[in-house]
Length: 484
Image (cartoon, rainbow, N blue to C red):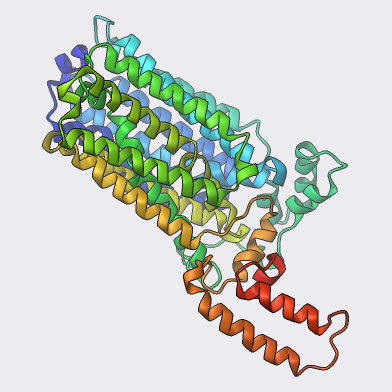
């Protein structure tokens, strides 16, 4: 915006990247301790405190006067609050949601996030023509107001019943569940009230909570969730969202009008795809969505990289429109898949005692990778128009392979059922068929052991043979997976 450059001057690509990305560093730090804060003062109060800190930082940025340092300090304070509330939101929604609504609740959060991205593009576009500094201050002012409303609204939300149970407040937890689940849904009520005795006890320190997510039986899930969150950011989604006006300008659109409109359209695409996800996420399953969505995301990146490497956008108008189409296809692919399953899956696979700490750890790692992507974006584009797409496409392809090898499907399972599934795998991984030789040997050993047993009640030799055959070809049902 001209009014912004009048106050702060024209920023170099490196300084622009730092100014945009610096909010993510303090967000990563507080994101990693958000779980312990949430365990101490509750999920909802952690969200409220984070929102208030974010509001303070945004207000400082809005009031910056010819001082880029003041703007950056405000963004750092805002990032401190952002890490707190983002690190707790997924945990809170997971724990207050009955099984049949859990994915829809987390998708609702994502829907509001993508809706805000779209609104942000159009607010910025509308503020371009404001003839004074209010033009660039307006987005910060709106952030401040929104964050204050979130902090106030949190006071009226129920506590997480699982958090209440962990504090020994059983009767209060029952009253909360009465508000969340109808009395005739007995199974859902049992799930929300079920908390293993091992997960109760005194409050852990931040160090103890972080150590807990790396203990046997949990660390495999922690590594899996960490990897998925890292791959999500290395797909380049925030490279596209943060610098969409630059990308569309690079494709040949006028920077003052068309690029902002195209950016806003990208935001609307994100909203539409997130909304559509609510209809199929529980029908298709998390693992399939990750694999197919990541494959499409990688292909879009590779095609865009080839376009720029061969000079297609600069040779014809049709080439420029092709670039725009594939940027939008990338947004559709990512938002329809990795955007809606990553945090949901990562939160679902953790047991209650480690969910808050693990989720906050992933949030911190997610923001650190996000920082690296954002701070390098403008300089990366300035040096090469094609290399960013090839790089993020390669990371997306690796993420697909990782998900194929190590993701269990958890669709339709209770949180306790998910816990049993992962406890049945010593490394918390769904090994691909290429590694089935070890399982086949194990199955044969079990067959020999059973053949030496006396009559097994209710199980004939034919039953045993069929059971072993199903194990050997990797088609055992959930009960067998737990035995394994």
